[in-house]
Image 1 (cartoon, rainbow, N blue to C red):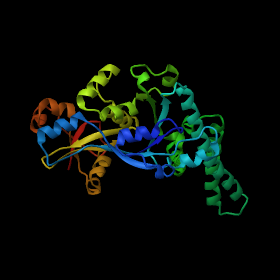
Image 2: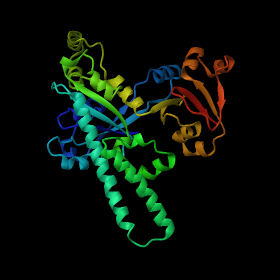
Image 3: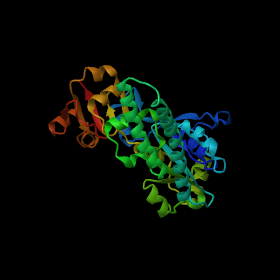
Image 4: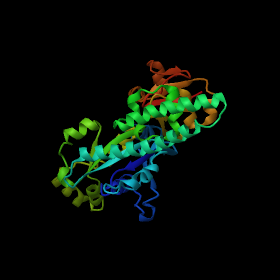
Length: 342
């Protein structure tokens, strides 16, 4: 899954990118966006790997793209800067928590920029459809254009009220009709406050949590600086700052799950692997993540939940204790399922 790191210039967005992916920001790619990958730490996969001692262990991962920072005083270029985010699966909005500013107001401004960019792209399409309506067309094409125009006019109306298209309660056909627009305001979003050492241990503002209940805080620059110190010195500084461990792993996990992702496992002596799947997807879709042939020829899935497997210790014991299941095509995969596709 590709996730966009977004925010205003000066929020420390590229520092977050460097901290999470380990990829040093390249100034030459500042306007085009720079990609990096982050592995998802998972103690469950670690335990399975210790047990099976496979030749290979493969964690789930996310691809992150560091995008150009938005401008506060010169907004005309912001839609172009945001365009890079349209083919991402979700947004991590980096907020400046180290300069003493109002992070809730910053998040509101950022969301306004998303609305403005979406309004521009939808309004352009509305204008084109209105122009086409004046030209002769076959009845079926004219009817399809009118349906699209009516839907887009409803969306423009909510945008002009400062609301997202999500407030319309679109049905499945309507969602499909606007999918090609890749509306930014419909993407999964997580607010990440980039704090300095003064913010460690302090709760996030309640006003921000009202806007973004799952908002996170992380002292990214400080933690990168600590990682460069010798272990003994690092522990002393961490103790003085009230840090017990790096928050990087937890932040990566929180980003992953905030994007509506889950993990299922395949196990064996050759490989233990964590696979990413959208929450709510079924066993056939999970099989397709492994290989398209498994989805095409799917019969059933052998399933044991990780907690049950950890408790009983083997697939044989899972059958004995009644926690082994055979599931069909419509089974909704759960986070932590261990699956073998038949």
